[in-house]
Image 1 (cartoon, rainbow, N blue to C red):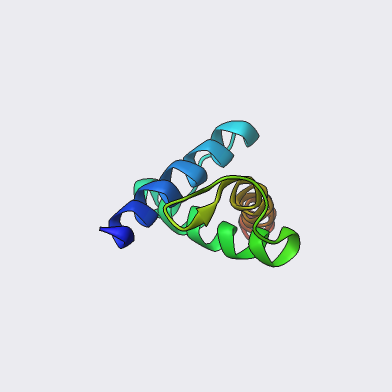
Image 2 (cartoon, helix red, strand yellow; image 1 turned 90 degrees about the horizontal axis):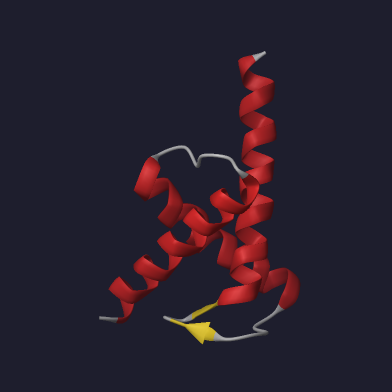
Length: 82
């Protein structure tokens, strides 16, 4: 049950980061889940486990890490398209 909850929270974090930036995450729902989980790893390494934890993911660092990840991905994809 914990793994499914982590996937749901990761998907919501990835979706919320995309909404905040106004950019679509490539891959749809799967992309949101991956962005949320990888973003939580990035945010956790930068900020630690501050703020509320839900489903094994610290929400605030995960959101910040997901935003960073989506920004980097959008810059890379933009450079590839040119």
